[in-house]
Length: 127
Image (cartoon, rainbow, N blue to C red; front, top):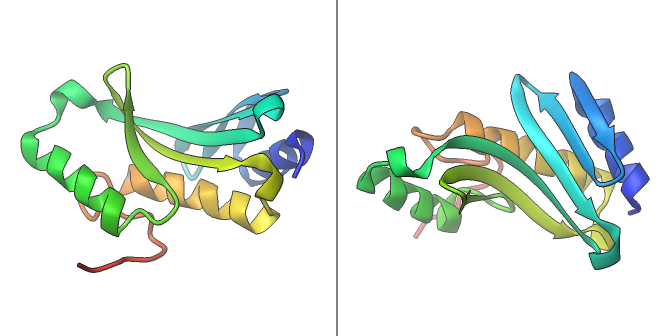
């Protein structure tokens, strides 16, 4: 998939969007997300900020780590600059429209289910 195609898919899904050329800020189901892509390195990521990491309890941190193993599927929780993000990272060249659409849904679901099921809403692996 090329960058313009990916951005077109995102913008078609979004309630609103702005940006292009590797950075698109958009809203999907009342959640603010960002598409960041780098053609030269064949990488993309969709991210959505959730909460300040410093505000989390030990129990919430353990729940995030467990979720990354059991309930997040292709999206993950991650931390950067004291912000917990829901994130999906992938090589651009292997993306399909279905995978981009699934990525947006998974990242959005991780934001929405933070503090409850911590789930991408797609698949659960049990230990």
